[in-house]
Image (cartoon, rainbow, N blue to C red):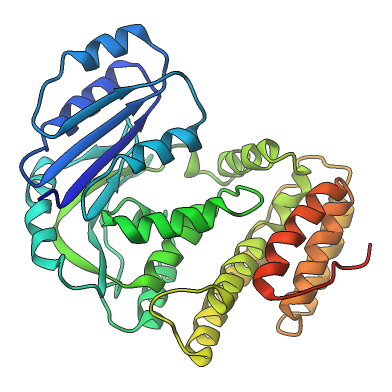
Length: 351
């Protein structure tokens, strides 16, 4: 029985990508499969992949397509109970991957466990250090979420094997949103932690290189690429962490999920999520990238800071939609249509 699917949506065609894919293929066995879906369009890479023969190793070459489509189609090929999605430049430790199917075998029958967490080696320009989240193996979802949010580092929880059904549910919810934001990885991790706890594996499993995310200036330029691809005015960057707080808390309070938490539990989880993101919104300076709407964005941010704790979710949605409408009525209506449905609102905010 396949317990683990290692899924690699691949686009790079350099030596590093080929080396990482070859390494991943060495991890297959009776209980583990590797699926590589390459959309690079490189004939040389296609030839390289055709020469790899290994048990439970599927190497799929397709025409160039978008990253979202490549991820989705590669994931749909997975047969394992748990799925570990990697990029073609990710680096993992062989001993951890060799032991992972056995760890999954030992926890597969426990539905309260939705993922496997291991320590991560984090690489920065200043050096390397090991990292592990506290309390994400707790039974209490509030304790799990608090442990996750207490970390000030990168979101490495996303680089963990997760139950295929849980990952599919989270993926469909996140990619159903009207716009893709760079904080969507944190929304995904939130949904995982709401679904259940992570089992611990006492090994280093993954290497995370901060790269361009290490400096605030370059990180916000990456954020900017998300806004640009969604045709959003760059001044929305100033709203970044407020939007993360609003979207995550709205999902916690209103979406259907298992376990089906009580209203009091949902409120406590939503309060924790929103207050954490609101503190980031208040404390982290955000660039407007020279947008003509910079003044309007700053005015809105100032009002939100002053009204902390006194805004309803309907008010927040109306504010966001009004700001979006300054550059695109279509985008404002799209955002309202999605989030008002989740909130149960019936009327669009006045223009």
